[in-house]
Image (cartoon, rainbow over all chains, first blue to last red; front, side, top):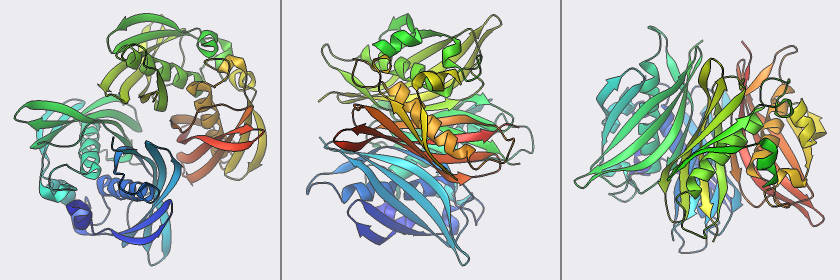
Length: 123
Length: 123
Length: 123
Length: 123
């Protein structure tokens, strides 16, 4: 997936219903060379929730995002960002996950975004 | 803004409370070389709603996104994408815009996403 | 539908893909005898979007709400409230509508809320 | 608050940043005498998230809902419903809470809704 590769997303943890991704900060995804735009933060959030949904999907079932919402809680400033997706409800056709994004710095981690992701199984 | 430049966003139309952006399709923003990921579609939606809000902001006031939601209505397949932001309510501290995204092909245009964007004036 | 009756919702206009509802203000739905709670405003918004979706559903197909979002733009003060639902996308299984709520007073109408409603056809 | 009283909401648990409410099922809030409408479920969700935000607000500060979103995960069938609000981020002007709703029956509890609530401090 070219866009995932471009963002530099790397799995950090996978368990049934839960996935952690790491995304490095880079000037290309910022609006001022430092703080990351809302777009890449939303992309990380969507991937985290979507990947968490995939961990519970039956083999061979393809899921695609039908909606995601992004609440930005603090400026997206950090050396890298942790996206954590966690399934709340996995149905036959729709799966809903919450997703949280944390900024990682040498002083620790701080939550900067939260949202919900809904995935649908391809018919 | 490096990320806006990387996405290739270009203004197509600006009026008070309304902005249209064009975003070209490129393999780098797809998940399979063809259909654009939810992330860049959300970014286009956020920029469109946010820019519409800026057209109504007093001079010198900086706005930043505090939330956006993205409903994906159809696969993001097209030669380029039109993002249309339209302010619904402009308050002193918060501005809410709706934003719609259309896929453009040689057969016409089709709406592929809708959502809402909330911007806050910097304190 | 007992809750619709209790809220006093009345159709004001129906067309394919669009429905207007009127809801009277009453002390029972306020938090202070005057301004309506966020809950009944969200209910009006949900009913408006949902009813708009029903106007496009094939005969015999039942739809139910799978999500709705409510942005409150101004205090819900008025003699009555107009909910306007408008379908954005009607698919085989999912229909998405935007919905807007306006407060009606003797000085005119003012938008007080906007949101999106997603309906799913019963399997 | 007349609407809260009409819904029959009762506190079940309060701690800093977290509130649990109980709401009884009654025919008046259903669409068929049995399953509760999306509106009252959204109202419970909004009250739960909003009350959680109030537990962290400075004395004398009034908060009001500026948005809430409701994802319905399963039919709202139960003897009563538990709304659980939990603050994710408490800022000077905006507080964001997640809120979950569970149906309670004699066979146990089942999550039927999730969402996010944003509260703003009155200027």
